[in-house]
Image 1 (tube, rainbow over the protein chains, first blue to last red):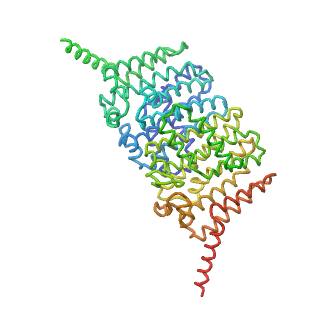
Image 2 (tube, each protein chain N blue to C red; image 1 turned 60 degrees about the vertical axis):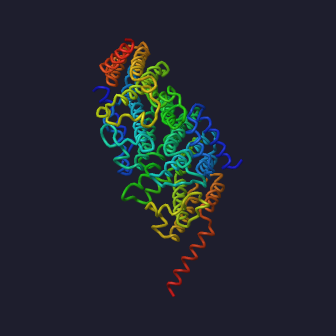
Image 3 (tube, rainbow over the protein chains, first blue to last red; image 1 turned 180 degrees about the horizontal axis):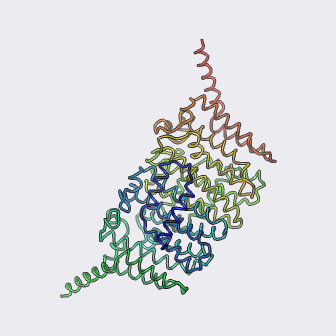
Length: 301
Length: 301
């Protein structure tokens, strides 16, 4: 079973265990809609890959950690899609949760998924109380104030925001959580794994900015041009498209270089390169860089 | 210092510690607005009173548990006030969070407070890992699916809801958490304290239904007549006003009777009676019962 299948299966198992049988049916349906929607599951995959590299010795806990992080990610997408933010009608090619179930249930779906993330950790972690507590701390740091994804989203409501701080919180925080939680779930020190999460998280945000401009609505399954429309900070607007592509490639190089010298380092580096290709295909990078250099060259003549 | 002052002070201390210094300023202001708004702080008071009765030996943890529960309560009020639910412009006599800061920040304020509840427990509980994990479980059960306040709110979105299950989840769950967390924070068995939380929680919900009909908008600091307007289940509509008042008085009696035989049992029972008086003054109960009996008597003539 590959890492994606493993993540998908773990999500299904932990979701069913946590959701129980007595909850309101429409809320449960909305929560399922939010979680089981063909996501790339990159955060749990990253968590498991790092745990492997750290000698994964509590696989159930590693899986639960990955699931908890993915649930937080899903919760943030549900709330971000709502009319108060992006007002996005679609997500991954399907109606967004508020479009399918109404705003009230979308609000509660996000709330319920945030709590479920903790429930999943609690269900899986009692045999390892120290690791459980460390994981809960990591998860909370990544989601809450002052520097988690909730704070990241809130930077959009400020008149001035530092682009790097905004992106670190909005996207980077859950990637840092994924790599750190992978280590912690295996009883290892998370510190050497922070940089990998940090670089990858920023790379994802930059890739999102690039794709929002290039416009691959059908591929993304969600509307594009949202950053400009909502006046959001964007690397693609700040550096221009070819500048943003160069910045993205640099972040991927730094992510690859940051992988600590462990037995499975090469496999992890390969995963990073593959993800990079999935996010912004190198053929696209090349064509934009060629166009930019041709344009610069014609200006010189 | 009385229990209310103690709760208020603990909230201020734990909020500041958790919120840090680098979060977006408007989000922090909105979170403060949601939390420091003159609430009765009944849940943390109840938590501390039970911990006292159990020989409170980790007062910092008890306080953190009360704060965590109050933060969850505040989060639910912010989201419940939003246009998708009650669309309430005021709360405790002030603008609701979405009126003062907009819907986007209100959404994030609720999310941030849910996570902060866990952060507060984590900050205070590391010296008592077993108690910390038990408290996190209690908190999660009280808020999430299947039977916590998020599920309770979601029953309003179902075409059929069992009134008792709805109220147990919507209001009762956090009261059960308050009494159980009080015991757990002192290293005691929470089970003997469940009934007190259960009865008090239902009494609060019934009192809310009664006050929503009687209409004391100025006293409540929020609009009344909301249950009928939103078609919500309500004991006052199901049993009539005097029936609901009788039901409320019975719940308070059961709450008083449920207090285990501990040294400070009398003090706890006194607190319950005082809260009852604050919620629905006995003079009001008496006048409605007299009116009902006069009306019944005039029908007989």
